[in-house]
Length: 286
Image (cartoon, rainbow, N blue to C red):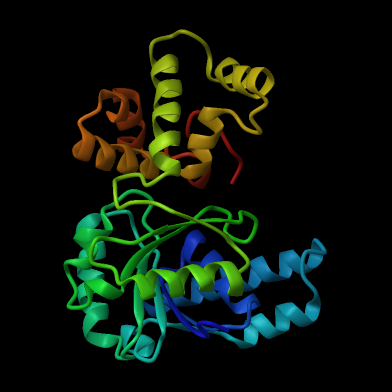
């Protein structure tokens, strides 16, 4: 393998998905969480995901067993010291990510180790500035669900060494079997810079009373052959994630199309975050 020692910080849906695809590809993977209880939850989530994949016929029993043998879970960043690649998949907050990268910079000791962020919208340059190795920092944005979606956005900065970006692209494409596209380091990168205004337009349409949530989604599914409507997609992504992405892009570009609508703000403040909380623009059984 191009990289066979991987660390993932953050054991949520994205972090465990990234860890799963790396372990299935043959990498030795360490997942780091904030404390022992969360590390155990990440273990349970990952094992459950792999066993469901076996039950669905997506992977073989032997592949599942092999991946589980290559996965370790910890609450200590020091356990990532020997990793060749560490992927950050924590909360979408610039300060939190910068603080984590500063800590990883002190811990990860391999001379060619690369630090990558799975952020969907935050400047990689700002995150890399917290380290002493900006030439070995990139954005590596996976899409949810990670095992099912092939796309990965690779975001080098003006500081990123060409060999670093090339190595990570080869790892994602050749080791993980992903489809890699490159983006400049601008808020939202490629996909979210195009997707976010579309989702926000649907929120504004609902907010203005133009149509019901059901009819907005039905219109885009049946009229434009989209696999899912914009409001259902926003619920799936997480309204807090959509708010963070739109805020980040609006702060960078000052384009009104990126400004979060008041309805989105009120829903996030109310804890209505979409599928993960059971209520967003639609209701979900949990």
